[in-house]
Length: 475
Image (tube, rainbow, N blue to C red; front, side):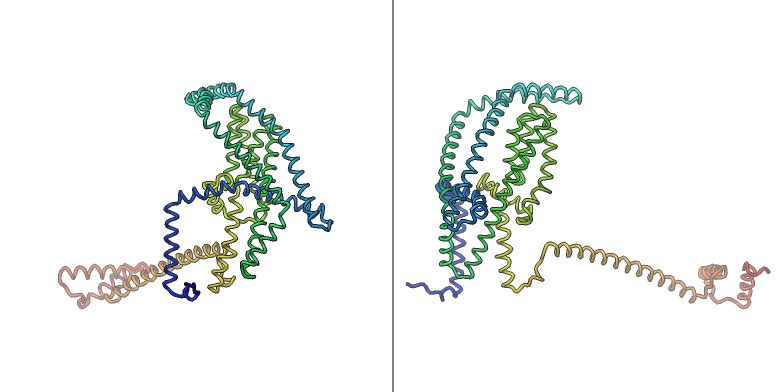
């Protein structure tokens, strides 16, 4: 039976497809462990290819630099590309060998020296803690007991986990072989870059309409710009932080300068939590040597990371990423849980790609579909102004209600005053002593049952009395 596109217009077809997708999604979630295990095995098989593509991607900007500037006058593109890649690979190889020759031996010596002097460091730290305990009158015997058992616990752990250490060593050897295979593939990827790009573009041009093809290529170009800029700037930022940290430690005369500086520079590559990990590791190493060194190192690290976050990184990255800190933190957690260190390192560019994909493609398409113009689009600045305006309107409403209550109370007082005045006028009351005497007389008449109307001659009598009591009348 031949499938007809007209069937998709039927309501039951849409409901059936939605039901099938829902069932499939439920089955995947129910068997998430097995699905994730299969994905992990597939990922393990293609790991050399992924590593090779990553290495080629990191080296390609340097090769492009040589290709455009150093060999840009050559007419044959094959020769230009081959020479640029060769020079870039030689430069990278020289850098790696230099680090291996000068840096690795110092790292090994620093680690060996640290392990050999661990007992002495523990004893000196115990002495410092005991002196501090005597001065502050605080019982810190638990810390001394921990330091006493530190070395023995480490030796015991090594003896109890020989098999685990051996397996980790074998895994490291297997990982090294995988990395070498990826490095070999990276060389082929670098030399065949333009063939790979041309083949991919040809496939996408044949597989989708022209408009969709151009939007897809624009998307991939934007992703490439974000990823390239981030990787280059992040590596440069790590080198700057490591070098500055090494210079400071050398000036202060601290030990293990190379070891701690390398740790600080490498951990600085990981966003958010990386600098914290480097500071903790460096502080733990230095606190065994001299607690004062550890304190100075931590204070300097705090100052350096503040400068890095507010000065160095904004200058390097510019406004190309522009991702909220909440989204970065979410992607760091998810990337670390799913892909480990690699997920943490690439969390920021992936978050930037997801952010611009959502705003430039998904959200923009939905707004065009609903006919929403650019002037009607909500922005953070507009939301802030709207919030401030709402607060101002609420305050203005409260002030108006307060004024209305004042006016209402004032009106009520005036009405009450007028009512009292009207009541006095109805009962013939007059202000002054005469009014008081009239009220007393009226109350007395009520008690005795007498009439409110004065008898003959009585009114003249009270008027005379009132005139006599009036201070304005001297008689």
